[in-house]
Image 1: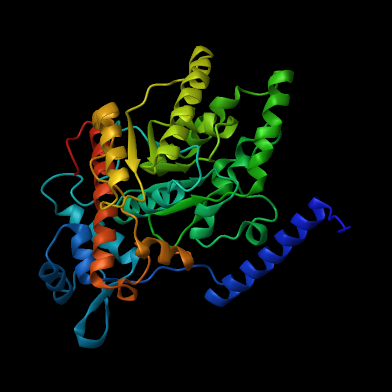
Image 2 (image 1 turned 90 degrees about the vertical axis):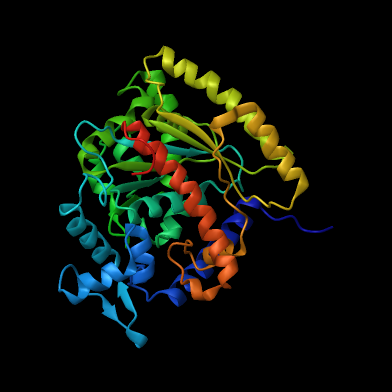
Length: 395
């Protein structure tokens, strides 16, 4: 008779072996004590980000205005993320209208808090949150990304391996716990994107799911659904947009994030099983948030949108599902989908997004098709942010 194995030991052994291999993989990609960095951008890429002609950037450089780019073979000019911010600040001073190059909050504009959610794994939730956060940062917004998923994929994409880098805490849990919470600023990490900060995640976040029932029973502390919103209030003046990558379940963390949010982005893979799962998710969300609203939670949102992810235009059933969703939800479905692309998945193998990776690694057609898809989706979302501030369209 085959000897049975204790499942706890087997799983623990597998976890240890996998963690060791991932650490070796990270050490191969980056030196042991190094932090992940970001490539420099060509003057053509920077010109497109700023909405000016490349020749204008060359003129600024020749006149000694603005940062001095790195000059490489053939006279090609390259700018770092911090130099792009410097260019934005300089150009904004001479702009005809406010917000041309620095499109973030002004006056009484409220902090935009976007919760990216889905009940089902594989919907592209983290990929969507990462690309949105980075594109907004590149576009001149001050962005805080929060990894609320204990699996911490958003953190890994930005160079954090939780079991090695967060041994003594450092997640949002430390700031929202019921006993001895720390200031939110204590868990915010700078990233290699000049305008993007991150609160990383790890398994510690699950403690909030365990602590909350006890706190509710003991009536200890503030109501659980207000905790994230109250903590964001501590850094409200430091950011224009907060993007929260929610866990793939409707627990106390997700409900607290939804209570703090001003907008909701639901990722949907256009297949029947995924849409059926989303239906159950929406029913549960409606019921639970109704309870939160009755308890005094603010359930008013600037916008809610569904974004179709991993979309294959040549797939007939997917097209039918997208048409079905549009017939049901109308304008609540974003016009542009995120296309399924080997460029996005291949970049992920090296823990990079498409905004980080060198496009020379892909065929021109593959890269441009994928980046155009992402830019279109993120452009739509940026337009929604601007309209929430009372400004029409994208900048």
